[in-house]
Length: 443
Picture 1 (cartoon, rainbow, N blue to C red):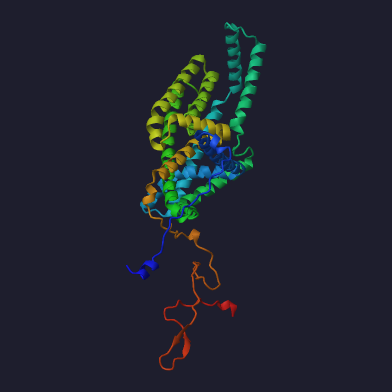
Picture 2 (cartoon, one colour):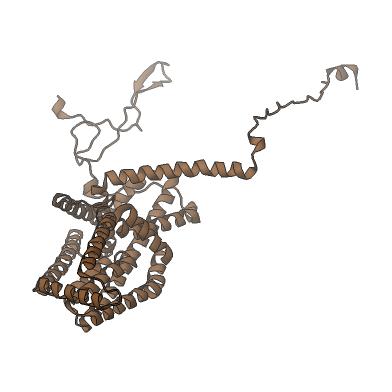
């Protein structure tokens, strides 16, 4: 090797990188790892709880809108398959929606009319029967080992009535009650019917519009979770109608066989109450026991109690685990706890919507946690062609006469240098987009 080459070589010396030492703060090094982990989990749970509390507060403030909307969504889960069935058999979409809604209103009105007629016929002479039943009760209590006097019985009844009034305030006037005035009820009914109409007409487009609010990469997960939740809601509604029908037939037929009056209203009441799983059938069945006690005797009331308990056992051990559990994937214990929590927080509406909301959330979170949506490409959600989503026709440039926006671009002229004289001249491009049409009204 020559001297020039040796001189041209660079001498590389290792450089030691000194990292600054972490100054101990006296806290982290004195805390166990478990405490630090628990603290990290704690503040995250507090943030999540605060977000849920804000959401519940907003629902309470908008209860007159949220509750009718939830009713419309729950009913639409039953009617959407019917509308789709009619459309597949070449019915017009408008006629199918009208038949579904009118048929539902006719069925509900018929049940209410039948129950009202039966109750009006069965309450003839009710005051005399109540007086006789109360006298018989006092005689039984006076002859029993308790030996209660009339004054003591009256005081106990007054205390029991006050306790029932105080406890029933949670269920009657809960945080999310629909309202106590007739105006609130009528407004909620109209809003529910209006929402149901548009869900049946354009439900898919409404959901696509909601999905487009999320980022492009999250739309596949949101769309798939929504489909899973909607499927679970439809299964819950259909299965709940089956369970409610079985409860109503069982208790109603039992009341008729025992000779209890107003068996048909009892069956209708049990049918409506059974939409609150497990708890509803027992609560409405107790009405049948009271009616048997008032209009019949103790033996018939005990027989009615046995019928109610038998139906409740069949529902709790057969219908709920085998039918409801398979449809909504919610354990019966979770159903009871969710219904109790919903009743305490929101009264009757909370008990009614607790199970479907829990089932839908369970299905959506299970779908997202499963990760099957990752294989779906993050494509754009297609827009709908329904006339409800067309914009109002505009008369300014850039809009077509049909109302759909037309994007136009102004193209600057390109400078083309000719080979003959080397001068530049401006000519429009042949591939440029056409200019936007001018509005004749501006001239």
